[in-house]
Image 1 (cartoon, rainbow, N blue to C red):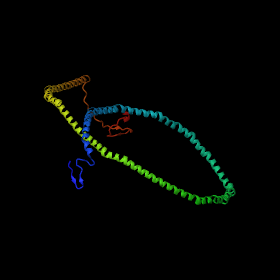
Image 2: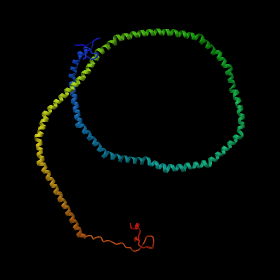
Image 3: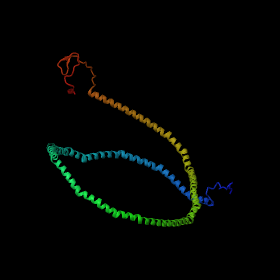
Image 4: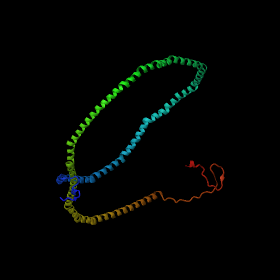
Length: 388
């Protein structure tokens, strides 16, 4: 194996990929051979299924789908749409007849008149004619009583009640809070508790915190040491060998297997196409060429002979016969129409020619008047409405 020398040392061979070694080179060709042997039948079956699926789709499924679509469209437009429209109209009419028109009639002709003339009109009359005058009178009396009697008495009574309320419910409790409870609580509870907290509890708490902090630091250092040792052991005994095995063995093997599957799939495709071309050539040689030769050598001359000596004369004779039949039918129709006209003329007689009628220029009465207008066109004696 020739290596290109560089100032830094030997360089990796060009046919090697970065990171490849002897193991990759050793397993590449056997893996590709085995994978090719396994993939070729799968590719052949795949190509066969693909060709069959395309043929079935083109020959069966697509025409069947178009036929189903046309049939469904015809059924919808011919049957379902008219029936649906008729059913919708019937359901709408039935729904209105059952749930709309009865309630509308009940509201319009029963509830609205009864509520209006049986409740609203009497209540409005009672409010305007009875309750409003009574309310105005009661309001006037109450206003007079409040302004004349209750306002002065209320001022005096309010001042007396405020004084009694303060004397009974405010001033005793204020004095009790200010001169009894506040001094007792301040000098009997707050001051001793504050002195006890500052002098005794604070130093004890500081010492306890310092001791617990030292113990925690020692435990943390011990835990960090144990964790570091466990991590080193796991990395040295487990992670490093597994990582080396993954990089040195599994990665090259997996990459080679994937590459081998891709190469084998492409080679199998070429083999499948070659087999397909061979089968197509064989079918053409065994079936296509004989069928084409038979069509050109036998069917075409026979078809031309039938077209020139059988079909063309028969078509020409049929056309001439049709023209003769149409001419005979046309002549017969004209004869029948002439005979019918002659028979009618013999029974009824010839129609008289129309004679021109000159308009009279005599004066005539106009409608609605008893006088005559010289030179006016004579008007009919009855109205146009009666003439119609």
